[in-house]
Image (spheres, rainbow, N blue to C red):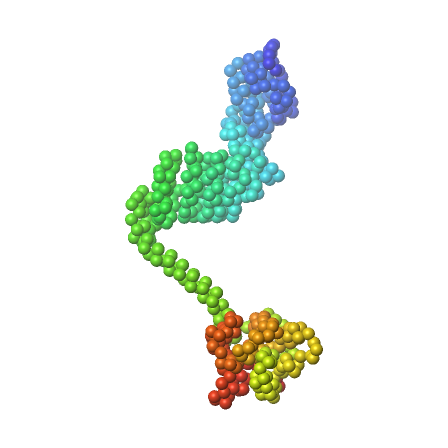
Length: 468
């Protein structure tokens, strides 16, 4: 309505009106309403059950202005909310005209949320609500003023709703970590994290400028020349605050000093050499450990396996399988002297004392697939005797056989490999790193029979009981 004419009294009292209509919908502008109720018409709106909430707050300043000319609002008494019942609307402080926000409207559980137009904000009060982390969702309105003080929160995470937040109070929590991205949110004018467990500051905190403030209270951090920027930032920060923050740093001797005293960084020079030595020492330790792991990984594995046996740590056997043989014999069948000794001497001796021996030349099916029989017989054996000669890996079958023996040995912690060094080879002459490890650790038996006790020694090293 551009032009207002006429004048007089408009009686709307003694009805059931609780809320004012949306004037813009019916064609009124704010200026036209001011002209109507302040200079032309006297509205009688009393004795109605008025709901004095945030939707009503815009009308109160107009009533106060109109009372200069008319008797308006004298009987406009609030009925709701209960806290304002019986009070004249024109006498209610502007801050009390609020609209509550429900859980359905994303007010977090155990929190009190309301819209407060007088301060152009939406208050989310979650103080003392026993929260361990900041809620994942908040009301969808802008200008959030969040109070999460006196809780158990440990991390200030960067959440999307912080871009709609003007202030957040996280004082008296257990915060140790603040996401550095939070400091760059332009809408966030105030962050209060005093009385927490903060022990370091990220350089991004310097993004809090142009009147934006962070309240950190009194904190102690480790001294470092790299943190000298904190002194300049703190000086700027304290110019914005009524109650100043205080940051001290701890030196190696546990002495506490303020950041204004570390300009020359002398404390740093005192310990620089020691730190360099420590870094170099740690690097060398890691390098040596890595090289040892690469070069001696099989030796390490065999030592750990022996340690488990010695201290009886083999409580759980990862392989539960039925075994046909106690011992599988692996040797070069092309070498006549080895073959005769294995068949005529060692196998005969072991079977005499009760072992079930798998001897490939004897127990493999004639005409069967050789590789399949290697796989099946090595898998169905508990222990392995490997006769090491200079031609042990001469054939591809021998390479495959040793590979399956090792894999079954690794899968079954209770199995054993006995290496008999028939040709008295040195470890440097062995290319296979697994067999080389047996010789390096002296986990093998030399074929020399100087003490005439070779067979007994083999029996003892197998570490299995002969079946009854």
